Length: 459
Image (cartoon, rainbow, N blue to C red; front, side, top):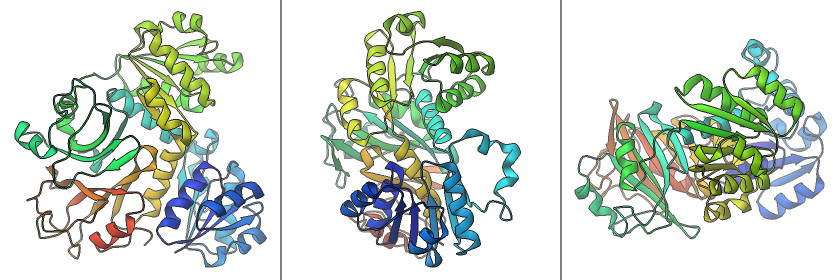
């Protein structure tokens, strides 16, 4: 498939890398010659230097033959105009745009994005996506990654093993006997930055491992307890950073979290005043999240979850560590720079939120259409979990998973059939119409396509 990506920042580079690995014809546009040089050196893509909304630049990038345009430059306006030009001049079938400025996203202006106005097929809002991810984190504070699947009937959870977990050093195949009524399947183990997908059940989890599992949402508490994580939904939250993400998160807590106290620290005085006027119940502090006195004034010592979402990675990491040191039970930090992510957990931060990874997941969800319902990229971009419908032609249908010859780098996590979650076991038989949670290691999407007998890229 021919794809044009506008913007070679973290998100543009990330999505270009994913799509190029799957043998798509990808061209990336960016005004920075340095960024284009870097991405063409690292990834098998074409590069064009220029402003992505200019018709001549889009033409040079091959927009006339493109099936998909993804606009993720730093400018909302460039992204919107690029989609308009691609539609009007080049008749590009599908346009996806990242839009960050909240007034553009106000529902009262929804008609702006109709086919006769601004023809954008899918809008990605990183701030809204990140706020939703943090909200999930607050509901399951013992996890470092949480994703609802199958309309909320199934959960994908990433959790870190500790020394007191009752399943440490136990072969995974024995878990069914130990917990016969628990609908949970171990999907992947990340140890020292390396990914392992259990195949014969002989693998054992060790302290420090980061483990992804899929479970029936009704069994989530029991599944977390097997990892010695029995933390309850956060009842007190302290947010560092009152930008768009911080405001959205505070609003989400006020609206959807009952009996949860929310406080927010914002360094800019005028912004703090704005937040105080626009948030109903949140208590606002004007100050620096790295100031121990401000943290003490905000009662960080009795806070269940501290969330750092400023626009500075270093402030987020350091304030999260400082909050933990001063008594916060859990700490979550927003980190943009990929190289920081593997280091943060080792320092003691409980969970990392990476906006570019979340945005890439959202884009992939729209790119992988047809029978694909959802896509979620896992930590450190080591793979992705796909929610897909099993077609009658699929190699998975009508035979046990043991007989289906699931390729290396791919694991089946769970099946939803008639609103019932079925854990994946060797003797499990998938039927046509089932919704299946599939883990695919990085670069294994072609094997998943073959397994499902359907292309995942575009329909």
